Length: 79
Image (tube, rainbow, N blue to C red; front, side):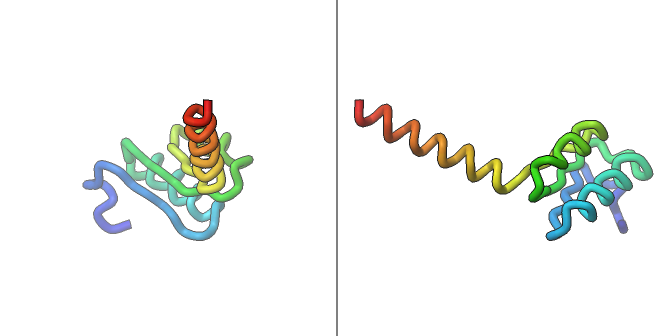
């Protein structure tokens, strides 16, 4: 956690949701980080982050939103 107190944003993106959430919680509360972003694969854990004022991104949700946007764009062109 070297230098974490000087960072304007902390991002945790290991391959383990629980590790990312735990790192986010540690830097948020022990180091008073203003902005913390974590990657989570299991979208059902999103509420854990929002309850702690931690921003989360979920690759499957990002992909889903992009697919919807692409389909919507194609449908609007076909009309």
